[in-house]
Length: 245
Image (tube, rainbow, N blue to C red; front, side, top):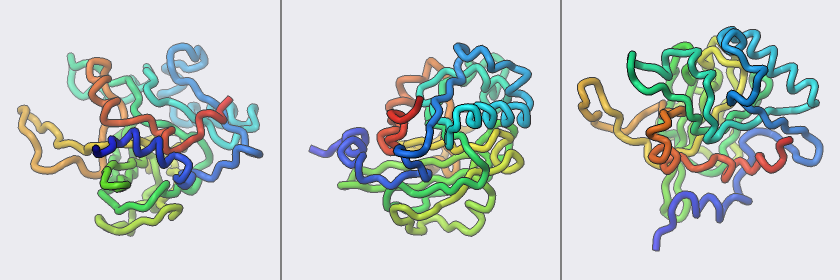
């Protein structure tokens, strides 16, 4: 019987290469909460990218943390900062985060967790969007899945070709600065996507091919089950959350 993606990731979790350089024996990893439970997060704070970045940097400095981490299956009101997550008046807002965010210094190197190929890439240059984005395709024991890397630098995607082979541990990019990462404090949005899916076009029409260089990183609550089934917990690859405090 063919294994599903979650089962494969669980089986291989100790063989993946780190996506960022983190040594649990000496580096501090700060758990970051962007739900309404964090009363330090205000609309004024998140709407000002520099203030938001200063807030994160101060948190990391006070905790002596190399990275901040968190966000999978987290409901975040802060997405109200961008129309990207409220595409049409009257539609249900998208607030549930589908990836894991790793917050740190700009130009932090990002590495591939396993062998794969470049599926697609794009510069999603709307306020609050991914900015420079890379999607890799992987296959383990005939089980296919994708990894998505959002909020990278433009330099990360400038010389790529679709179908290009990537080896485990290859540096595939770096954290971008706000002007190239969708106007966010520097961080990596890392997401596992099983099926890149055919997008729905205006008028309810279906596209001809699956998504390229983009996949929703945030969904509405009514679509939670469908999207979480298609986007397993990234920590199955990262293996970092157990070190966060």
